Structure formats: C-alpha cells, structure tokens
Image: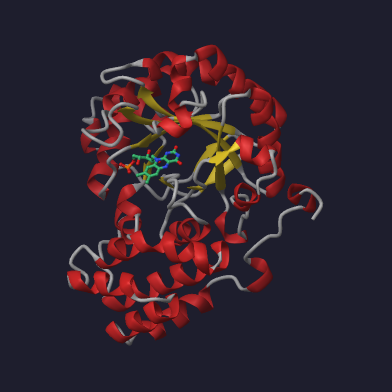
Length: 368
Ligand SMILES: Cc1cc2nc3c(=O)[nH]c(=O)nc-3n(C[C@H](O)[C@H](O)[C@H](O)COP(=O)(O)O)c2cc1C
C-alpha cells in the first residue's frame, strides 16, 4: 500500500472512490517511470513497434516479450534479435525466462549491455513448452530455486531486477503471498502480480484482492496486471489495492487508444488515425522482423485494429487474402485516403534514422 493510500485510509476515505493521478511518476530503484501505466509483456505481440507505440500513447514503462535465457546463452540469432532496443522506448524492461541461475545471470548481463533499464524475470508463463523446462509458472512452487534465480541475477547486473508472477499454479492458490516477500528479500526491486492461477490461463477474473494483500506484505512497488480495460477499472484497482501502477495487456492489442483512454483522453480514433497507426505498425514491424516473418506475424493485428466497429467485418478478410504487405497498405489507404496525411504527420514526429535503432554491441552477436 502506498504511503498516500495508508494516510487516506486512516482518515476514513473510501479508497474505491479516490482518484489516483495516472500521470504521476514513480520509481523502481533509480529508474523513474513517468506514468502509472505499464504496457504488458506479451509473447507474439510486444515487438518494438508495439512498445514504441505504447510509449507514445501514455505507457510510462514498456516490456519486451519473454526472452529465452538458453537462447541468449547459445547465441541464437532470433533470440538475440529481441535485444534490439530503440532510443525512444526507455524506460524499457526486458523480460527473461529460464530455470538455471547461472545461465540467467549471463543472459541478464547481455540484456543490460543491450541497454535495458530493468530486467524482469518471468515466473508466470503457464504454457507447457516453458513450464516443462522448469521455467515460468513452475517456479512459483519452487521457492528456493526462484529466490536463487532472483539473487543471482540481481548480483550480476546493476539495473533493478523485477519479477512478474501469477497467483500460483492451481485455482485458489495463494502461493504468490508466500513467495513475494521472499523474492524481495532475494533482491527483487518490484513485483508484478497477475492474480490468476497458471491453470486458469486467461479464463475467469483476475482477483485483485490478492494484489492488495501482496502490497501490504512488501516494501517495493507492486504492479497490478489483469483485466485492466478502462480508466474506471484502472482507477478502482489502483485505489483499492495500493498498487503503484497498472499493467495493460490484451486491451492494448491493436488498440493503443485504450492506453490514451486510461490516461484520461476519451476521444475515439477516426478511421484515418486507425489506418495511419496500422500502416506505421506494419512498416516498423517489417524493419524489425523482415518482410517474410512480418507477413505472418501481422495477420492477427488486422482484426485487432479494424474490429471494434471501426471497419466492416469483411474488410479484414479481404486484407488477409492479399499477397503482399504493399497491397495491404494500398487497400488500407483506399479505405481511408486521409490516412496518408495523418501518417506523414506521425512520421515527422518520430525520431529518425540512427536515433531509432541502437545497434547491439558486437559482443552480443558473438563478434560478427
Ligand atoms: C498473447 C499473450 C502473450 C503473453 N505473453 C506474456 C509474456 O511473454 N510474459 C509475461 O509475463 N506475460 C505474458 N502474458 C500475460 C500478460 O502480460 C498479462 O499479465 C495478462 O494478459 C493479463 O493482463 P490483461 O488482462 O491486461 O491482458 C501474455 C498474455 C497474452 C494475452
């Protein structure tokens, strides 16, 4: 619970009706985060284009998707690609997953060298491919190993180390409340809680009463993740849990305007704005992933951007059937011609050229 909330509760205020200022900055260790809104790490979604967009729309902190420590340690080229950090992403957390403290510490040093402001450790991933290796949510049930990982990683780097976790493995579990304080003792400078069990995956509701309990137990900032879809929900969760910030995931997929709305600007985007953001997203993703990978990666985003009553349903079907991204862009501009001007303006406002993509240190590429 934040000091402000403690004082308010002592004075008899109903915390649920307190308005928390989302524009207020806060800190994880020495890292200043300019708003109380955090963009969630999402595998298959949180590419650099998504993170840069999130920063433009009000997120004070953005996160990479989870990066395999084994992949980094083996010099896997695709894994190393996750360490490309743009100048306008900061502050940025790069999330790592693994199960061996030594390998994770080595990976964390690579992440720090690449320019991340924070290293986040994944103790929440419920996917079998990850849990069967002893990583992700499995570690919630292995407190000694989990604390060993946090301690070893925190000793290996000078940037703050945070942990993102679920409530536990099984429905009704309260494991996060036992483990959280131990992780802080081991060196975690912040905790993010997604209070669903690993078994639940994304069903049911995130139980933020656990977030409130965790806040009471630790003296580091807690970030609340799960079902933050509106300004009202963000305000309620901040006020009733004492969490330092809220994290937004699915609501921001193809919908950066959700971030803007949570920050207090209710204006719905015009069709021109939607198309301009989507085209910018396509172009940046191609630059990051290459045309071939980007073509498959982008397919899920068309529905996310164009849905919500913004464009007629068959339009998305039409787009995914087009052969090239160039054709997709042309079709999008045909549907909203004014988008070209919005896009020009957007591009003028973005940092250009060398300022954008910082090259990785050569050592990270293994000398080549
Ligand atoms: C497609 C997808 C991928 C995700 N990948 C990650 C991940 O790589 N690391 C992580 O800690 N959480 C991951 N999550 C969980 C989110 O960060 C977040 O905690 C969860 O979606 C609940 O928040 P929401 O209701 O705002 O979506 C993922 C969620 C989704 C939907």
